[in-house]
Image 1 (cartoon, helix red, strand yellow):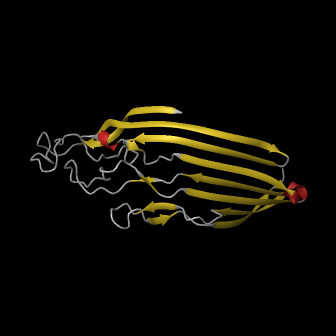
Image 2 (cartoon, rainbow, N blue to C red):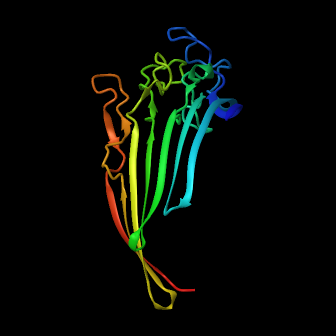
Image 3 (spheres, rainbow, N blue to C red):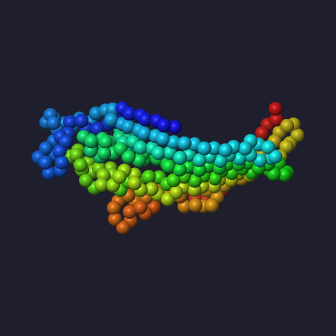
Amino acid sequence: MHRRTKDLLTRRIVNLFDAQPGDPNFGRTTDSGPRISQVTYDGRINYDGVVVAFRKRLSDRYQFQVSYTGSRARDNLLTGGVGSTFSNNNHPEIDFGRSNQSVPHIFVANGLVQLPFGVNVGGIVSWRSGSAFNPRGIRDLDGDGLVDQRDVAEERNDFRVEAFGNVDLRAEKEFRLPGGHRITALVEAFNLANRANVSNVNAVSGPSFGTPTAYFPGREVQLGVRYLFGQ
């Protein structure tokens, strides 16, 4: 897939002087009036991706599918919506870089095995690149009164948390009852390996920069029973 999208709706202050900190016009408006926050067409997205997959249909009591997605996503949308704000309202182009949603590599494998005695076992194994993040901003580049969302001294989203890995497993057994009714007992395990997948890190410069502050859920196991009425 090759996609180029431009003129996306974004929001920025359109009447700030294009002045550097220390300049007498820094933070002033070109018309001497209030700052005008306006929806504009400054958003850009570039995306290139490839998907490769192999699937075996159900035969000989098993099936599986393996897929890999490789992609390169770049944009200048810091928040991903119309409410996006730029590091410098006069220069949206400096925020063009790796997308906040970019995931360069994704691997997924799933399968199902039909065991004796009517037991079905299925699972999903997934692995993907860690989420991208920026060092927090420490300056106000354009005089809008806001500290920038990111430190523009670094390339946008040049850092990533550790890769995400997960294994989910499900086993199911069906019991047939008179009258066509059925009872299904199942057990499901999520994040079977209890991997500590990082969801957020400390983005403030200092000794703790990049230290995990939050994780996705650890191992979870649930039991279930379903009653299926006969037709």
